[in-house]
Length: 159
Image: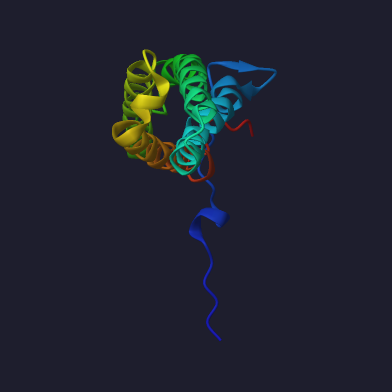
């Protein structure tokens, strides 16, 4: 029987501490949970509006997108500071990808939220629902790349 071992398990990469941390805990990963939940939540809310026609769901999406954008902006400030201030972060391709996906995600979320402000119900179909799908996909992609930074490259981990 052939047994394969993970070369990273034998020699894990050196960790890179976050410059923006409280008690050794990086702030960016603490904050991203909120915009992830809010921005991803706009998709099921839009689908509920599509299925029921109840304007409550259109207003719920408006609020989810607005709060998700605001919290995402706060999380992005801390992530950007880490990206700029911690020398070892920028050497990884996944950090650049995560950064660009995050900026793109916030731009799409802002556009999705902004177009709904005048009339949340009429903005859902078709473009609001489409942008919510794109937002959900971007949340997944940015989260995946953020996970690669933590688990593969040990960014923000305090040995």
